[in-house]
Length: 384
Ligand SMILES: [Zn+2]
Ligand SMILES: [Zn+2]
Image (tube, rainbow, N blue to C red):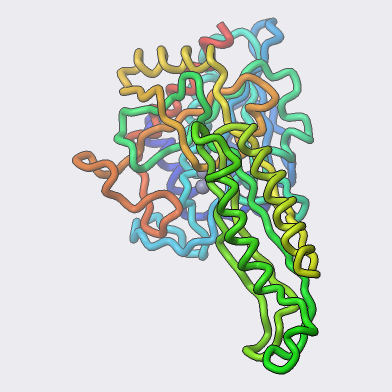
């Protein structure tokens, strides 16, 4: 079996057996055993189910980290592929391909000369967070994954970009900051028809909060900055004739810079609390998790662009996504490079496909060897 076939075989095996965040036990076992067979020193159970594998050559103290993520999503797969998942979860974000590409790169790199330490970090739970609001990257960092790291490289497949293309942002933010939040509004029950004046209506308060929050992006954030505040769920009330005592709302804030993120968080908290107070109730504004913007190091980005062009890939140097990625936590600590790798299955109209996170999402396997080779080129260049 040549390497391209081997990468596809790993991909199919991982794709058929997806596991959700922090439950990636079989996934981790597979990756750890393959890396051990290749001669890497492997540590398991980092950040619950994560893996750190290392290979050192030469005497240089430099450490280069390649990162993959391994969690799937709670989606029932509908692709009809022969290796489709049947367990109710699905690798609909392509993290299976990230692992397969990293295993491919690790295979090549064991036989290639370099000077320093290659660290392979396969992290759990990129898509969600634990009860303390920690994603996999946050926990991996807490457990020392970035110790002595000089540069960290990550790729994400994008199934709406043609195969043979790569999006490498030269000097801007690659992914938005993200703050999922929830708001709890507390009022006081009373009879909705007979004695509304004796209650405090959490629904009326919530209506005002929703309207006020929408004014933050339009009136508090600079028109030059990109920002989004969305409320996605609202739940409250017991019956048509009871003044509602409690309302819970959930939403998300996304921005492309830290100033806008700070302005929105501060204003949202004070608006929520003061509107509730004004009506005689109370409210809390709670952040579920705090992901900063994901920013490429300029030198690494230029190196990546040169390597991609040498590989005859078509490079887009401007692309920024409002999607969030917990790779951003690494980017706040060490120089990082995060790029998007084209993997559309539709060569004529790359955009005309089911997007990632969709039950019909598919990837083009021709992209995988390109991703593996890109990881190898970056590593050998940085450890030359
Ligand atoms: Zn995703
Ligand atoms: Zn993803």
